[in-house]
Length: 436
Ligand code: NAD
Image (tube, rainbow, N blue to C red; front, side, top):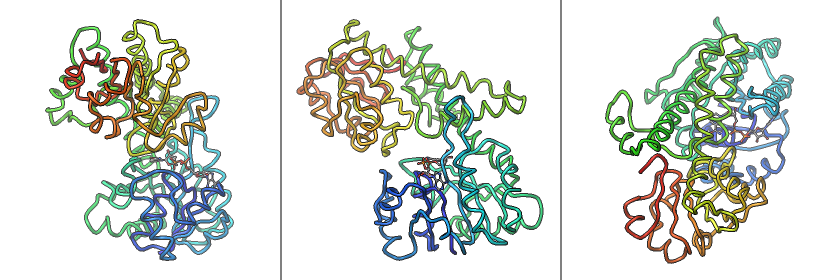
């Protein structure tokens, strides 16, 4: 099938390449010329495992191309819209400027029976508001939220755990759902749940899934706070409650919390939208989820300060990690960088390292010192702070090796990912989050 993908960022570039990899002919459109140039050369403009390979293959096969010219979407059966929906500058709500601009740009090139499939994460009610803007063209709007996880985006796109499509009432909507079944044929054929519903449910599935995940993380981080004042250990607690199949152990890792381009802004936008709907109280807890999350970053900083007896100024601190999570170079709302910036603000001599995210980090926080080499960051450090769970820090860094480089023996484990016993045995003053 001929498909177009409008917006080629973390979602769209992966979607375009993944759709080409399953045999479709895809044109990706973005307003960012540099991104389009890189993608057209088959180069991934950001780090995402497996993306470079399918991009190269797609471009070489001629099935995948990228352009800044919206007119080239003409003739595509489905137009996926995956532009950004960031938090508004002056509030918590989602900024829909890019979505509206994408629809405005797309409208002149739509034909009757085209399907426009919104993928961006939007406030409930957005699809119903946008549908009339394209109805005159005869195209049909569906909402097909995306659940990919950065770091596993290719796999999640090619083989998602469910597909959700919000359609308008009537035959045209049913037909559009059928078209999407054909687009996602390999997944549909293998029995992946394909849920056809109305616009509002489809939009809400996405934001409620993120709200649930954020709540689960903040729940265990709240338990970490209680553990800290009672001498309990949150990791043992998480293991124990996680054995209950109704609870489950995943997403119960206490630490410096969630970040990235989705969870933080999505829960804020959800709370803002609920308030607009006069139903703010239903998700008022999300404000607390957000507050707990941000407190844990401050707590990691506090642990460093305590371990250094309050004297952080001028101390050399190695910050291991800048990306909001491993297997990604995404630093949007990264807890890791937030911790680094806060320590720098206290006068520490901070050096940040990360295997993939340094270019992005440098651009946003030029005031920090960076090094590509983990061991250079560790050299002469008075304290070590692990804030992104790359294997390079979690599994491949022995406490003895770290001790051979660092000056001090303080390690703060912002992700509870290090082997605490091994670090203590090697003479380190180990401090985890919510752990004795
Ligand atoms: P992003 O900022 O990486 O990408 C957005 C892209 O859209 C950019 O390349 C930008 O240049 C482009 N763009 C903006 N306006 C445009 C226009 N008018 N025409 C064409 N292109 C335009 O953002 P992202 O992380 O890919 O997220 C996109 C959407 O997907 C958001 O709503 C996000 O919440 C949602 N989402 C993201 C993920 C994820 O893991 N990143 C997962 C699920 C859902």
